[in-house]
Length: 318
Image 1 (cartoon, helix red, strand yellow):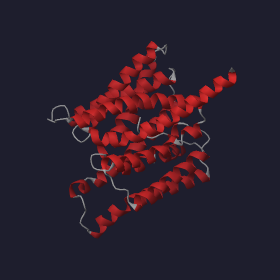
Image 2: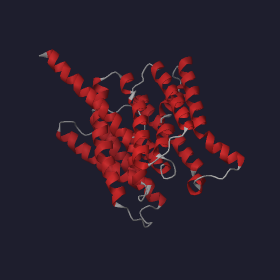
Image 3: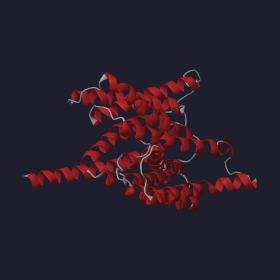
């Protein structure tokens, strides 16, 4: 009976692992479609507020207590950094960048976490520093074609998007920095609630943070007409990305070694590239393949050399 129970647990963990890899890999394309007609921070606010509130109520009904009053501030800070900041910036950038390109660039988050930890005094091995250098060289390769167009004066293929390209790249650099700051804060100042309730509360509070940014940006007063295509994308992001994906990820962290869970990062990128190509007609260029592979190699080296690789392996696609 114990052997059968272990086999069931292993099967469930493998299914959860596959679910995370597919669910979070498809959210890049989902966000790209959602922001076609919905302001990005408003979209993120709606998504995470609804998803987080439903998860909190569901987990509470399953016996997970709500966070204590003293934990709400730290959960709010982490949620806003991870979701309003990192994920909101990702959504904003996807107005101007292809989802597969965004997926490659945003996966520098684990590198940012290691760099941030080093700045805070954590000892980082030479191999991890090598991973950082390799990863950021990959970023340079990714943006090299656009850099060449800028310096050479070549006519960009898509002028409207090209005019926002560097702002979008900057958002995808700042986003992983926000993710790293949120992850480091969560590790160093943990909340007392259960992992599931912690994730749900962070999602809800991060959604409120995104709503606040949307309000400051004037999204509530500017007229916009969401299409059914975008609305279905938001529903998909809530149900598959935030509910199914997040719960599966939390299950993986409880049942699998952190270094194994961290490999979902690489599968997410593969899924994002395939979905972007097949469903959105995005183009995969040689610099994207070479640069993306280099970024992921750097992330792999960094993750494998960290003593506590857990949250460092996750990207901003909750």
